[in-house]
Amino acid sequence: MASDNRYSINFTLSVLEKTEASKLIKEQEKQEHIE
Image (cartoon, rainbow, N blue to C red; front, side):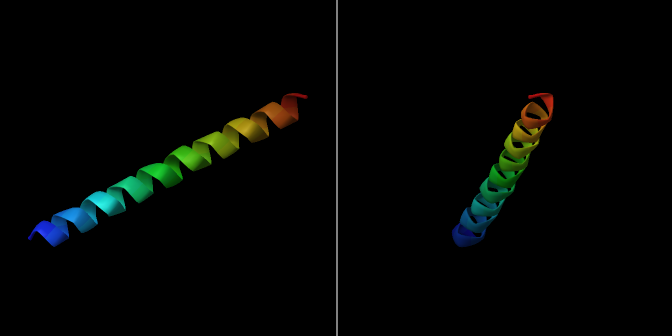
């Protein structure tokens, strides 16, 4: 049970990291278009 919990936490973290990364990439693209 604990290992399942750990896996789901790792999975959630990786999803959050990907979401944050895609947000940052979109922000950079917007700034590049403005320049």
